[in-house]
Structure formats: structure tokens, C-alpha cells
Image (cartoon, rainbow, N blue to C red; front, side):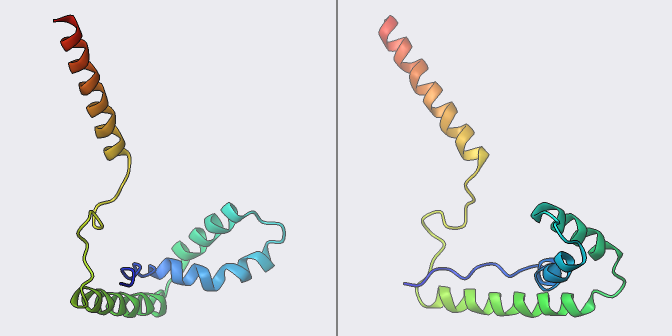
Length: 110
């Protein structure tokens, strides 16, 4: 079975990937993190973003079609594929461990 399609890039990310080299040329020696900051400044000041928004909308449509095809061919988000792993799960795991150890302490004291 193939992997689930990756989410499409936003209009900003599509634009940034095309503008990254130009930003590097105009700012020699710029660090990677500064490229993103500079890109953000340029993006916010842009008046006409319609070209990139249209490309992002097309990418989103293609993604949605690919997801439908994926699911129709037996692909599934079961097995927790739709859930994001993160801090909440880690906290829950810690609480569970703590609760288990508290129960063990109670059993030992009886």
C-alpha cells in the first residue's frame, strides 16, 4: 500500500520556495533563518498574491483528489494516522506512569 498523500504547500510556502534563491543573491551571507524572516517581510508587503493563492488552491484540489483516491484504494487513517503526536500524548503518558506508580505504592503499603 502506498503512503497517504502529503498536505499541499500554502501560497506563502510556494512563493518562498521560488523566491529563496533571489533573496540569497540579494543578501549575500544571509543565514537560513534570516531568509525566512526576510521572505515573511516581503510576503506581507506584497500587494498581489493572487498567482500564488491560485497555485495553492490548485495544489489543495489535487491533494483532496489524491486523498479520495488513496482512501478508495484501501488507504486508511485508522491506526491513529489522523492523530498528531505531540506534547499532549507525552503528558498523558507521564500521568499514566505516575498513576501506575501511585497504585503500586498503595499496594505495597497495604
